[in-house]
Length: 371
Length: 243
Image (cartoon, rainbow over all chains, first blue to last red; front, side, top):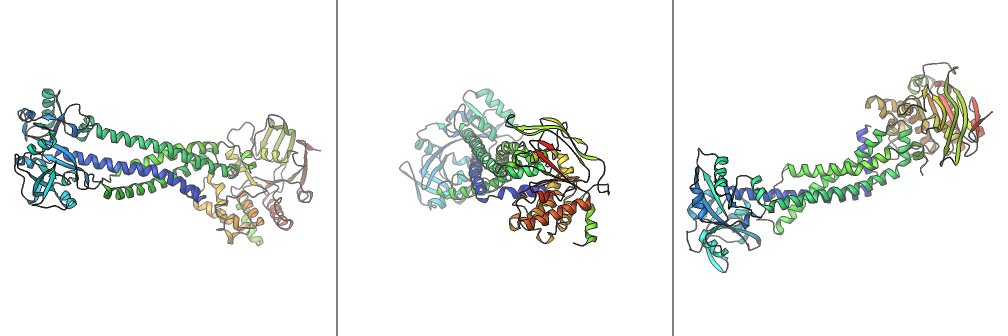
């Protein structure tokens, strides 16, 4: 038997207590993992929407708390087009409406002649007409969810829009929504001459950093450029809020899990006082006893990490059909699971240290006398 | 176990270099040892003086609370004295700070209540003291198997302590005490929780260990019959050795 196998064996001496401790910690880890999967999905979707396939960067209103609340005057489209290095600038208006079973049905208003910048592929039918004609194209996911196809109508603000085509972009938010003319969406949203953002495509020989700097220098008071997710997070409070909530939950999981581990390990040390006395009598050093108890604590929390990760993934699988499908595509990145395990490790170290220290400092004779 | 096997076991059990039964060298030297508990309210050892020769079998007797177990704990470096000097195997136990190496290499403990680890097998219990030695896992296992053979428990190595009789548990405790080839075996009432027949078997095994392997054996007991097996009997009363 090795010291390592002893550490693996000991936490499961009292199976019920260990199982309860594992479940307690696993719930915290599951929350972290599930939230991480959702946050990553949201970030990926937002980034995809932001880049819109063919564009190099986007321009949104300055000092806006959420990207969807951005409102830029249409006149900026031409202003940005005139900036050195810009090949094209396309204004889009985005809106969210509850349609069918999807509470977050994304509507994008755009000039149909500029659809290529959104990198969309019309798989069935044709594009919508520009201007006020009541036409719309819907995404593949929306078509499946709403059970609608070409020739059917989609009601938006009590007005019926004829579906002229089905498109696919690969982005779940867009594929779960619809594109229509900018004029129509401005009318629906009562935002005349306004756009949410401007997609910018730069010339082949131009440099993104130089062009964005030129725009910021010239129009920085009213608009800001977003070339990456990091840029977005610096202006979009929504994603920051999710990130903050995610960290807050992680800290809460560490505190609650840590207390649970301290309790479990103190009980374990308490029950094994005499045994610890024997280990000291046979020559175990204090640091080996500390290592053993700390190791047991880490084993407990790492098992909770595995259980929590599975629970987190299962929670996502359960939540998806309950309203999240068509809005967020879960992203199972290794970072999320590493974070879960890191939290588990921290909980193990923090929660295990005090009981381990206490055990290592037990006077051998007192420990041996313990009944 | 036949005599040939016993001879083979000699090296397994003790690392004592001398083959002489007893030498004139003191393995334990205690001078004016004092120890009190409960902030001085209870005096356990009151200026105790004692010398024990290498290879000697000494039994310590005395009534409850006389200080005999405290004395054994002091020799085994499980507790520190308030005043006095104690040298065991040439190591000054008062001045040396970390005594875990001393306990691991020089001392083998046998307790009244065997104190085996319940979730570990018999074999694993014997391996536990060897974690602090520098031997490989393979060597650890080999040595544990040899010791269990010595105490005639080779057929029960995978059993848990709860699956053994009282006598068998105490034999595992003896094997555990011998794991690191100690110079001194300290036995605190080793037959106290056993019936007389099983107790006799355990005592016989300890005596044999002392006689054949030249291990210094210090045993605390309150039973005069048990004490009479030793080369010398020391009576402790009110924290002092009685002349």
